[in-house]
Length: 482
Image (cartoon, rainbow, N blue to C red; front, side):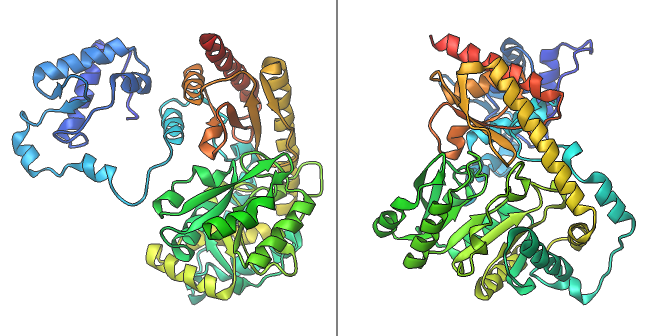
């Protein structure tokens, strides 16, 4: 519900809320028998006291629109709307079913809060802020671009000039030798992972993932019936020594890793572990999905090449995206894979959406081949370094010994451990009340008391204010539990 009550209106707020809910009931958004949001949740969404929502519910109950049962939810009345109830599908039941599971509760709560209240400082989103995006460069390209409806645009692997440009890009910047025919364009890393899970794995298959890991926050694995087993991590990245035993015990079908500036921890996989991981995977004939979103954000070091750059890394499926280094709105990602896999994924793409718009692909192809790309990349690294340093300074100043973290050398976020024992649910709720959003570490499979805070999304003026709000939230929850 994006609507908010008008505090300047002569109509009491509780009546505005009651009328708004009545309209939603009339329009079928809340069909007969469906549950309304709880009083607490609705008060948070609308920014009003809970007692105001109670009054609104009392008004609707008096009019016969809703009914409450002791110990249960508040439901839309089926009696007053008996005729409608006989003909209206029970949409809430449909919404609770389906094979694709919803996002995790924390992520849903964060996104809902950000959509309702634009004043919340966003340390949760893994996107670049507007000032870090190549807006002027892309607008310049768009001025001279025009749609070319020729047969070359119809490839289900993606726009051929973009795949040719990507093959050159991957060789120049990532040391990967590939061909345009070995690349399929996607709308980003999440669609790449979705295609892989849907096309190359079956219900009941077991996969190994890093823990914590961005993969553990994605419902697509559970939706596909994939069993996920966790390889532990430390400050040197994932520990591959347990992979062989895990493979033997659970019949692991695939390994998912993010070796460079791992999301969410920001770690860089140690060279010896890279070698051990690749050797073990080769020995087991185990396919590896390497997610490489953040390598080109490296600030003050030469980042190691991806594992895929090894001459004998035929068992690696390599995925990447422009969302973390350029405009996320272009929605350009890719998968580098063997021919048989590419053909399978392309067939699935054809079934899903018959391909996506060629225009953003044209823009992306021109951008990475233009003289504007490298200066943008250098400016991006400089600005991300400044934002990281500012966030580190504010954390040290405002939270001090309350948090532990390692300073990352790339990526978009900091991985923090809160030293006093805290409950993730309580801390997130308090942080949102204070006006700042972050992602609890348990979303990624970590223990309670970790958080990922992104510095790429907020602007420079928001970072000190956001850390101040976060500090107040931490202190409030810690003091409450003592």
